[in-house]
Image (cartoon, rainbow, N blue to C red; front, side):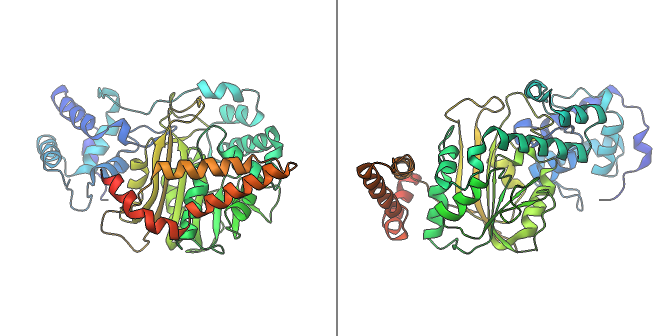
Length: 408
């Protein structure tokens, strides 16, 4: 983008011009369509909002939307701006004089009260929100999470799978086994699970899902052979080396979601997969720990625009139990086409009654009493039936029906 003209940074903003800019910004900035980042205003992110939400082209200086383009040209003509760069520079120079409906995301200290006694949190507040201090705070929270639920740090895949469904329905066992059955995933594919503070999650992927080449990535590790200690924004993996990146309950901890997306795209294979589960929108706004609020699958998909070939799961549901920091869960699984996908992504139909039947059988199996032979045999029979439900042979028969029901 060309540099803005310096003359506009110092000019006085008169009320007529201010009103024209205010209404334009109110049109551009819809908080529901914006990704919130702690410490950033919407004006800080205005370039991202223009390109991601409105497809503004800085090279041609054009909006696809005719009305937006006419509005932009009117502002440039009346205020003698040479382009969008001048307008943005002028806005930032006079931000205190503008009466905007939405200047910054909501932020909160509400959820931070539970961290007051944490030394890492005190250091963060006293020394400032540097990248180093933020990462150290998140690392301390992760270590504390392991200490609070030590049973999940054992290599017990069934216990961990039950935990995944403790406050919400867990679709991922069904979805990933279905992907395996259909051949989109293979047992030896390299898989990375980000933010898995418990070893049980790796056991779940390797044993219960059958993805035996799974490794974890977190800011700390108790077992370097299973979990790599690293920042998800700078992963120690080769380009085009990972088939699936699984990110459950962690994208909201990202200090820069766009850097994270670039890193995920770098490590994924050309037909790789990305799964996200995150709270959002936040009830109280972003915070030092919940740095990012993507709010919706639509907002996240914009960051991958032109690269998404197939969406194999998309849903936004309320959890079973109230989450203190969010109104719902955003859950999304998709496959990329790294060299570009021009068409609209294919959306796999999802048939809730079939999933509910599978999930009921699976839950009964996970809660089996191994000391009781009858209970053990019954649970194994139900589990065998659940495997039939996700088999490609079965799904190839019911898929046409599911598509018809989904269309209606």
